[in-house]
Length: 350
Image (cartoon, rainbow, N blue to C red; front, top):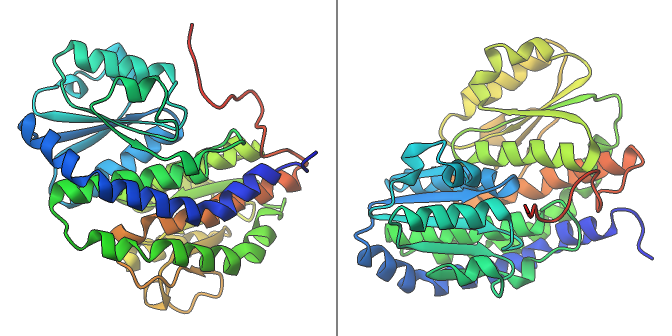
């Protein structure tokens, strides 16, 4: 019998090995993606998913836009139900449907709705390439090494994000992307070993009652995923915002019982760090996560990724600290992060 959270811990700490598969799969699919793009006269990308994979879609779409590719991330239900009409413009669009299980009902129905409206190009990103989503798609990025026993997505989220990132790079003609991202598995292994004690200390501090996760661009999708992990695993109040938006109302909740975690990027680090320091002045605890000292200054409570990579290339490295924070919070509250309350691995509707 495994101890509570053992599967989650194994999946978080082993994920750099699964990243290597995601990079290989993404690189191998580049030519087929370009063919599909050219066949439909591709002009835009529509990423979709549910829950974690919706937040992944937001991050992937933001990465695509930074390459100059028109892209949106939309919940699968919005496509299926037609509640976001702009999401159902199929001409010249590739729909990238992301689903760990390949069986999530809303995602399958979104694919059906996209096809019914004339959409002809569907790419599946999934850990189960033998299941229904893959069968309905023109191209499949299958990631079996990222499969999980636990309910909350950790390893799978990171691997599917990397596969989407590789797809975007291929469509944008980024010839150097594979070489740059090839360093991520080794960086991830070193990072997880170096931050484990800090994340255990911070996650176990039950005097923190509220968590706020801040991120811009692609990092907003990761902040939202961190919010979800904290809720799923530890049943703790958490929210996600763009950094400067936090001053517009939410900072009223910044006090000694709040931890504000900032995912610091490369484009406006001074302004993002300034928000965190303002919240510390109001009494909140802060945790900046950045790549180096230049981004965060001489702040004693900071986590440095030390990758040497640009923000868009190192995006996945922000995930292990956030996942470990939620995992340790769950254990500190006497919960089992492997089995979050009321949740199943996939939502299958009748």
